[in-house]
Image (cartoon, rainbow, N blue to C red; front, side, top):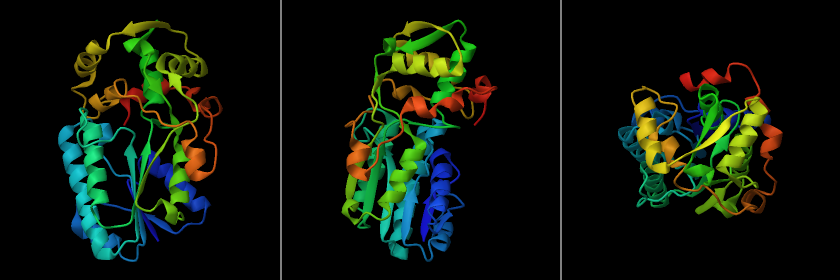
Length: 287
């Protein structure tokens, strides 16, 4: 039996669908991740846990501490009690307890606690993920829809990106369930294509059917501008963690998925047709 935390989120929805197609016995965790009684009850009879729950989209440092770090600590405690045999944690490329960026710092602290837990683990670090309902590609296109006739390129659009389709990450996680050679390992995964942001943005706009004039935006203005426009939103489409992607490249070896999991990830041009649909400009106003 596999328990999945964060099963209703962006990654979780794809993962639960993939587990169902593979006829894997799995259930979603319901409740607050730092509720020990709920965890204890739902971990009964569970052999493996895939931990996706996090607060990144809220853009609040307090929630990173409460949900990501303290929540993972509660999960670890209850997994020990339930004698869970494998804890799989999704993290981020660049995670480091000493990182300058709060999200990468929190993810690094989560990784540190998982490694010290004594529970057999696998940490899967991932690059930026995309797919229908994502909080990156769809937000970028939505923002471009409102910035007519321009599209803003932070840092001139020079940051390198290596996005991974969320369905391919789901496949990696399911494969990990049956890979004893990945126990107590940390692996990084990303797509096989590496883009400069300006080229990636051009491809997204082309599929969405928008023509825009690219305008460089100095990185020094990016955070103040994002805070001014979105800092007051309860669930901001552009948070400080969203902005951090333009300061730290999320890249790894081109063949990482093939080497670790034995398949080629999908190409971006084959999977972003979901950007060509009506109403996408309103995506920035929805959770």
